[in-house]
Image (tube, rainbow, N blue to C red):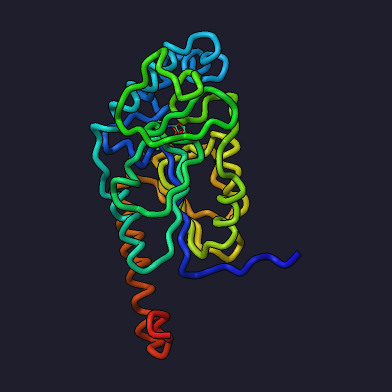
Length: 250
Ligand code: NAD
């Protein structure tokens, strides 16, 4: 089967916990991260939920409060600004809502969202809840215990096929603030095309995927400089080709 064409005006932003670090939300794996001295399986796994849902709720209610108090930073805003001229799809591993609050429109949460809740039963629909902690014994209309709509260790990642379709057709991909050691999320980047422009912005990554250029440094400093350059390059190419029809006029 023929590969789908690459759209030079489409950008995929693939983000992880590091993009929100400078907003005051701890990453999981850095030296002072949330997992320092903690066994993730004991508080954020499917087994932990089955054994001790109160403890899991407590952990995620705290994460949700921290996220609600944080503000989007210059990197989230720079990502949003790309929408002025590019088609932008944000594929995030993050469970916070800082991309939403920066104004990005098209966001895929691979690991769910702290701001959504659903009943603890297969097929239960997630609903937006905002920054309201979930109580133990709080149930949906069918009597199922409510839980945050986040992917626990041992559960399946969300929206894989949709994300792959976007990664395969993007002319530019920027990966921000991820260690790339959480799978299957990190594996999605293998679907990036040879001819697309591919950049990673992070303090540290385990292994740079093939074809990606590593730009080591803080998201708030590096992401805005990349997005400014991309915005300027598209404006220049449009000036050089003034005959391009305006879709709004056709
Ligand atoms: P990670 O904790 O494994 O890695 C974070 C990465 O960000 C590291 O590579 C680190 O070097 C980099 N980083 C830290 N500060 C940075 C900065 N200021 N600028 C640029 N890069 C910076 O995070 P991950 O790869 O996203 O995977 C962990 C999982 O943890 C994800 O699935 C996510 O669901 C979850 N998580 C989410 C949040 C959130 O929603 N904000 C926070 C913590 C963990």
